[in-house]
Amino acid sequence: MTVTVGVLALQGDVREHAHALETEGARAVPVRRVSELDAVDALVIPGGESTTIDKLLRAFDLFDPVRERLRAGMPAYGSCAGMILLADRVLGGIEGQQTLGGVDMTVRRNAFGRQVDSFETDLSIEGVDDGPLHAVFIRAPWVEEVGPAATVVGRVEAGPAAGRIVAVRQGPLLVTSFHPEVTGDTRVHRLFVQIVRDSQG
Ligand code: GLN
Image 1 (tube, helix red, strand yellow):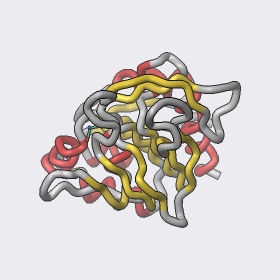
Image 2 (spheres, rainbow, N blue to C red; image 1 turned 90 degrees about the vertical axis):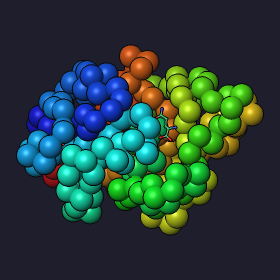
Image 3 (cartoon, rainbow, N blue to C red; image 1 turned 30 degrees about the horizontal axis):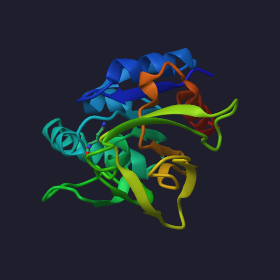
Image 4 (cartoon, protein in one colour; image 1 turned 90 degrees about the horizontal axis):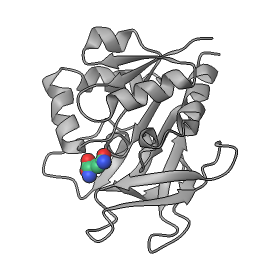
C-alpha cells in the first residue's frame, strides 16, 4: 500500500525528509496549505526553530487544522523542533510559544547546553532493527518526563547526557530530538512509514 506523507514545508530539512520517506516507499509531498494537509495520510514536522514554525503555522492558517488532524488520529513524526511542536508541555519556551501537542511529555528546549549544543552519538531506538543509529543533535531538546500515555523508545547511551530521553512514541505519534534525515540512514523513516501503514488498517 502506498501511503502519502506530508512534510510540513515552512522551515527546515523538507527535501531530506521527503527523500528519506520516498526511499522507504511512501509518497512524500510538501504541506504549506490546508488543501495539501487534507490530502495526506500523515505529517512529518522537520527541525528548525520551534518558535518560528509556531508563528508560521499561524501565518499560514495551518495551526488549528494540523491540531485537529492530530486529535483525529493522524500519524505524525516530529524531529527536534518538530518534537517540541508535538509536545504537550515545553520548558524554556519563549513568551507566548504554543505547541500543537499530542504527546504526553514535557520537553526542554536547547537542553544540552552551550558546550554540547550540537553533538553526535550512536543509540538504539525501540522499533528500529539492525543495530544502533547514528544520531545527530543540533541545539536539540530532550524530554524531561513522559506521562502515562507516552512510551520512551530511545535514550542517549553515552557521554555527559547519558540517560536523557530523546525518542518517544505515543500511538501513531513518533518524536526524536535528533535529525535522522541528515545521515542517509532511513530506518527511523521506515519505522514511521510502518506506523502510517498500520494506521490505515
Ligand atoms: N532549538 C530549536 C528549537 O527550540 C530546535 C533545533 C532544531 O530543530 N534543530 O526549536
